[in-house]
Image: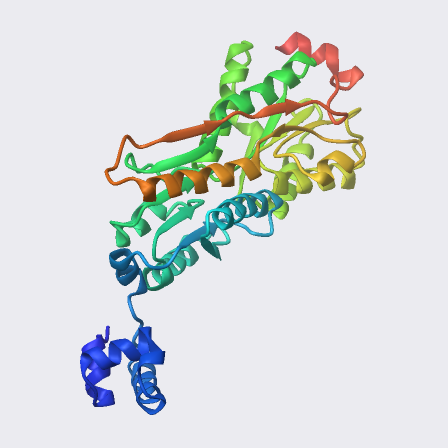
Length: 345
């Protein structure tokens, strides 16, 4: 990588002049600044704004990397962060990883040169490794955790929420409950899967891996997984589905409709995440609601509190509660199957 000294040599100016031309352009002549900028461009030089800002503490900016900005949940996370940052006089740089570790790595590399104060990140499977390139930057992991024991985290009670969703279906009489969950290299998926299993075990029901499908958190993953589960022979087919996020829930609902299944008469569905469409669809969807906006706001508050401390204290682990909201997409199993299912439980 080129240095400021290389830029100065190519522009035929002193290092101090080159630095001023890039950081304080009003302090140098236009012709000098143009020469320095041309040299920096030719060399591919990127000033380390991060290091300079951390030393001088002049700018008030934070970075935010979310996993899927098209997902309403992540959009609300971002709004919670941005509103809170703005209220405290900070500007937020927003990046979207698209659930792709390599794209997250590129975002973090960009932040190396442009982020002055701290970072809030919704981790991918590669986050723990990627953050090694920013060893001194204050970081808050939002919604998910990377496994770094030193990380400050703001999450929800995924395990308890998933257990509540599954227990609700069990109480209605369901014994074959399918689950569509994200890849198990993401902490939220691991916790929600664990909550599903724990509720089955608490009710004396055996965990059946044939009733579980993994996806990449997208609508088409939920659609594909639901088609697979709902196309099983009737004795093996689930009478209820618990779906691990709102995008996959959309896909599962569409799959049920394609197969001509009525909700909840033929199939009960519980989703994880609430949204406007979940409330207005027909029938309205039973969900595990999580406070997305508050999650983002808490994450920003935790980061700003960390920046304000002269000495680091204990690493906070903030966990917000979830809520089971019962609407009309859940009911008892189909009547013809109920005796058979109960006798086999």
